[in-house]
Image 1 (cartoon, rainbow, N blue to C red):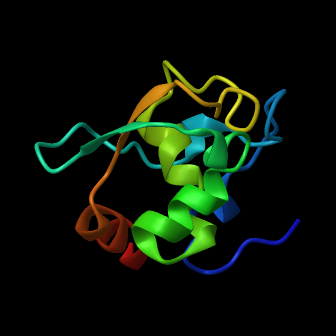
Image 2: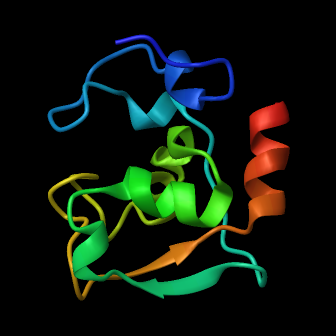
Amino acid sequence: MAYSKNSFLSSAKTKSFYTGLNYNNLPRIRPSVTDTTVVLTEKYTMRPDLLAEDLYENVEFWWVFSLRNLEILKDPINDFKAGVVIKAPSRATIEKLSRG
């Protein structure tokens, strides 16, 4: 699977069980006072891309939720379900990361 230029997933070199990615090669998204707490609803069950579209107007930023919530989202798709509480980085944080 190819990833766009604004996706850090393209820099992952080895595969993990759930995503086929090595999170150790990807950037960390550190906690920030600008993070938003999100309680996932049914709309977003197994669809981090939809939340990325709603928050960042770009479905390709679905991976930020996994990198910001590593302790909660062990499987970034199946653990993304109604009732789960995650932190969402601000749009400014994501734009800064995507510029490298």
